[in-house]
Image (cartoon, rainbow over all chains, first blue to last red; front, side, top):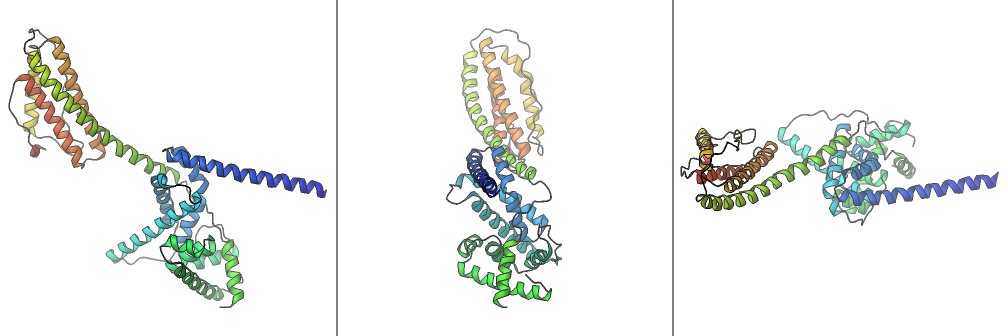
Length: 200
Length: 182
């Protein structure tokens, strides 16, 4: 029985490795084809990465409609800049960087528009349609309520696992500033969650 | 804030979903955006390139053919060249002065062509059709970008060239087309 389990486990692992390898090979081929203006190959890249890009946009904007727009903008930007992608970083990281820039650009633009129009907007947000359940849903909602700077740094570092150097580079801030923003985010989150009786 | 809370928070944050499916398929919007500029960018460029090449070629050819054709035998021909209604994209119209001159010259063209040799007539017909093809292409591009000043200029040049060809063939010298006719 143990041998059988080992064999199954071993086969399963091999399959997983093979599948991952195929995916990476497929992605590299799609990137090359898309760089030659093959929109079908680019659609394959879109299908492969959309959930991660949309997830990042949704976490960073806290708004479904904005996240959809940002995701579309990010992929359009990626298409336009594909010629510049040399494979120095993973395609997913390159795409994430574009998505973060898109989100920040849209936030800056909407802030300018709000200031120009001096409009009073309702900043209350509907709960996000994430896959988080139970207490994670409370944490997710608390993250959404963080100030922009703290939220962005926290999401990139604590949720997506980027280093402070990487997060800082994406956000256009120093690594030390990213660290400070994440510290601030944690303090605010603990404070919020304590009030809600969160027991993570 | 104590260390335990901080650690628990870090663990919980790593468990937050990083991949979330959008509620609707966003691909059609992306495809529309990445396909549209490709059409929008190339059509005017091709139209402009075609217009420049055709106008230069047609102008030189017609000048040569018209002069050469003066010595040819006079024969009767049936009207072969059709002149479409002028257009200037979807938003502007050419002035009535230009429209009248063009109609007059187009009506006289068959009579003038009858004085030329069949070979010269065929060459002029081909060249006028090239100019009119360029006008059609630039007009199609203007449908997409009605306010593109470069396209407007090219179209105006193309119409001017058409008029110039008609004048040279007919020996007329009236210059009625002005920029403010638009």
